Amino acid sequence: MNKNTREMKLQAEGITCSSCAKDMENILRDKDGIIDVTVRFADETIDIRYDTGVIDRKQVFIAARKLGYKVKIIHESPAE
Image 1: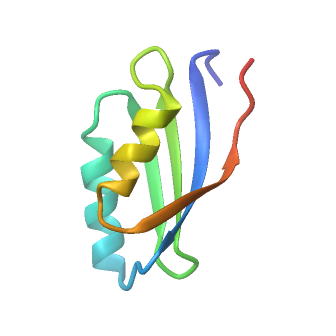
Image 2 (image 1 turned 60 degrees about the vertical axis):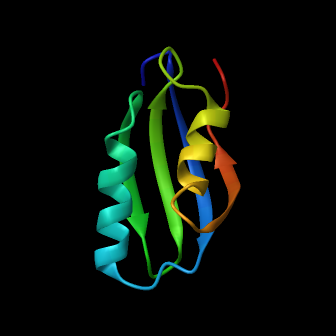
Image 3 (image 1 turned 30 degrees about the horizontal axis):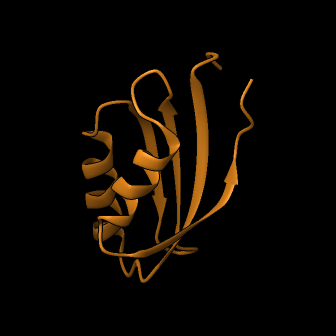
């Protein structure tokens, strides 16, 4: 993993279908600095890999929250 790459796992209440999850992935992936996103509607989680040289953790969290779900951080990769 690149020294500027971090990972964040979020719990997102209310994801109801795979179509919603796919839409969420596409919206977040379009945000500058977000490298990869996986949304799992079955367990209502969002895994995000992002570049700290482009976007910070607060901006990642806010982008996820703006999708309209109640989100909370359940795991983050440590800074190197």
